[in-house]
Image 1 (cartoon, helix red, strand yellow):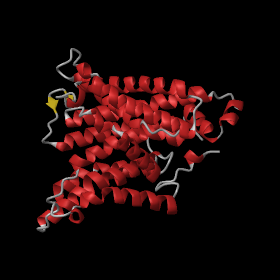
Image 2 (cartoon, rainbow, N blue to C red):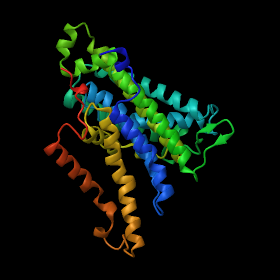
Image 3 (cartoon, rainbow, N blue to C red):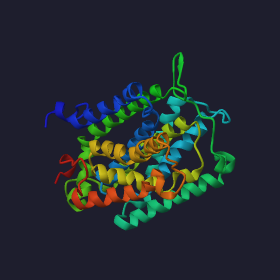
Image 4 (cartoon, helix red, strand yellow):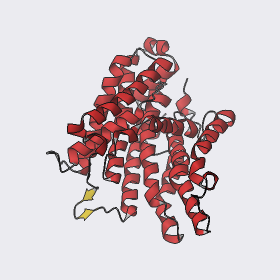
Amino acid sequence: MSALQRFSLFSRGQLVVLGLLAMVPLVDLFVPGVQLAAPMRNVIVFAILALGLNIVVGWTGLLHLGIAAFMAIGAYAFGILTCEIYPFQVGFWWGVILAGLIGAFAGWLLGAPTLRLRGDYLAIVTLGFGEIVQDALKNLEIITKGTQGINPLPAPTFPGFVMSAEHPFPWFYLYLGILAVIVFLCRNLEFSRLGRQLFAVREDELAARCMAISPDKAKLKAFAFGAALAAVAGALSASLLSSTGEPSNYDFQISILALCIVIVGGIGSITGVLVGAIVMVGLNNVVLPQATQALQRHGVDSTANVLSSPDNYKYMLFGLALVLMMRYRPDGIVYSRKAARK
């Protein structure tokens, strides 16, 4: 493979998905009564979170069930670094960058003592780490404000322009631009020397050692990169909400949702993760709320009983999607042959 092919901007599939996302605000402009730009920002945030998890699970083959903990670390690091009640107040951009670095350090700290663990054992450790982070954030009330959360948090700013919550289009395109940069970095990481080492470790650690690859160092780097992206997602989410929220918002369900995005979209596939985020998070944040609004416009009271509320079908649809994917397309919606190197 030539250097031009190896270090290209995006694949065709990634360009298609990013291009379709870029046209989402046009739907708001030309279709009356439809508002997609605002909820689709959450889709972008979870796509970034799932891209971080994909590095650990899809590329390195490590079962990670605590990615929500690093999202929480990123959100609270961003809050402490930017909120006016703290002395730092570094601003949005430095807050996001430093939150990513703090998340990478936290990922390294988790990876260092767990290098020898695989499978169920690693899953239990990462799951426990997620619970520890939640409890720590609740109990360190003097720093994290406990269950109150840290607020208000700054919105993204540019010279002479501050984004407003009333105008979702600038937010959407900024977050989409950040997602595009992260996709570019992940794509080139995939075909870098480190990326090939991660795939080699996933396929066979013993063979990787025979090829002068250090699985321990590769795993540490995978944990650090994955945690950094999760922390960036947490920082972007906190800025979007102008609050970190309470620690229980970053519970096990967030980790499972991120894992479902990776599985449904396609394990190891960057394009698949983008598609999986649109399918899984878009169903919850876009399709079901729009269905509820449509029923209300037609005079149907969605609160009248359990069966009349589309939101009550959320977990059934999630479970059905997973069952169908595992039965008919176990490799995911977008299968990555490059991710399946031998």
